[in-house]
Image (cartoon, rainbow, N blue to C red; front, side):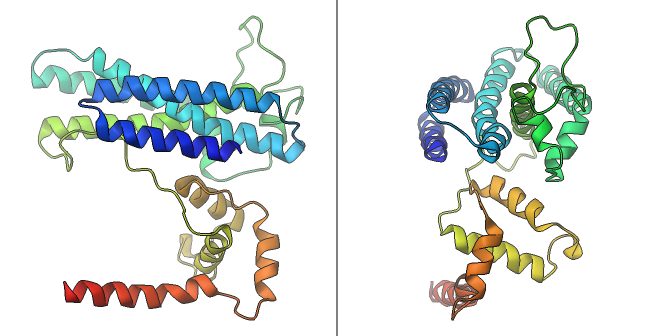
Length: 276
């Protein structure tokens, strides 16, 4: 239900990306859409009773997706509306300073960023579960902030969303600088095309296990869950209980229907390309 809401958000953002006439207009409209969807998410959250794992999933993966879009488009809007109307050199300095600010944010939150990038789960109950712990292991909660709840899952969810947003902001600023240098691939940097896995979940899981078995990632030195989570975030698909799915695939007559179809489809694609 909540993933459907996120897909609605991405579809609306893609529509805006195609219709808007400039970066500022796109960012402003996209921010409003993301804000509305985030409010809908919060409303749905109040109507659902989560078990422990669902609660962790919500604060670690679901909510940060919405926050990422909200924060990214807000940052782009403020960056572009405050950009100096001056020489190219002034604008390059402005973008470079903004890029340095992004780097500073990553440095301040490096522990959480590495936890996220490594696909770690050992502290999930502390970071993303209500009443998960009495202490904040990464010390992200400043002691001087008044009125801050003792539970830290909301804060970590926000921080994680902001880190993901700032990855996009970093790419945006790098593209803007490349555009001023005349080295940009695209004339106007903005949102990259959203990648969404549109085949079955079992096909996704089969593909990830095939990559593990072939040792194609990190020379085989990667945990299954880390790769599932990493590719899942990239392609907006939740693998769920992938081990159970694998067990079901092992007893099927044809155990690898998806990966077995890949060479056939690739051959057909090449044949069609040859004809053109």
